[in-house]
Length: 134
Length: 183
Image (cartoon, rainbow over all chains, first blue to last red; front, top):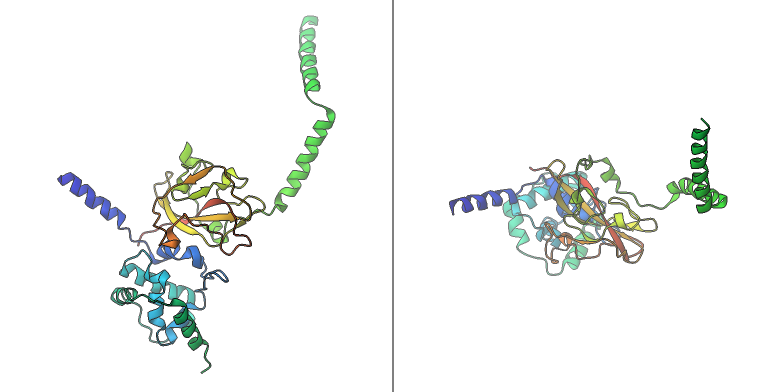
């Protein structure tokens, strides 16, 4: 029994692998968003040179955590926050607003538990705000 | 001496006649000609190569891996631990290249498999080759690390011909994207 328990714990420890954010991106995001973050025209939006623009408009920071691909990724809050911070820096550093505070696990957890009911309309509204001349 | 020559002559004569009975000069020329044209045309075939980024990563050494786990045409090949489809290695392509006339989908499903060569986990991209009807050879369905279909990006029951001219799936390849390094 003790042995079985120890074995179970050991297996659990093996299973709870923590990969680097770059590897988690490859495993959970890259299949659609591509290795270079370019996306696929008409199917998958690009991250490269684009994703951090959402941080510059009201509601954008929340949207990035709530969009289904992020909110429903099979990652815990800590790993999800790490991947998000990594990809913002890796794919769209130039659009990160001054004074940006990286996502925390707590914030990511809170936001991802409030799903977007109508993703498309939120996205359209945010993109219009991003494109609005100021 | 005479006896030796007679024996050698007879043997060579028998061999030559046997070859002459089985083949013709024309068939020999045809084969040589086909070979010459084929070799010259090979680089022109529209073979979709593995993605550029895949070409740069160090691929684990499979040469010492024997048996089915080292055979790209086998369902038991180690890179196929989460594949669902027809193996391109059986369909005129390889484990990393689509067969001529098909196009590799840039959108893929991705998982990890442990290499029996070095015991390390590698990130594997399963790209569908699209543009021809189902290959129907070497059907292989393995589900290591696969998630239910509501995790669309982690499920291999879906057809993955996105971003390609045709949505018709032919076969699947398994490309090593890199080592799954732990944090």
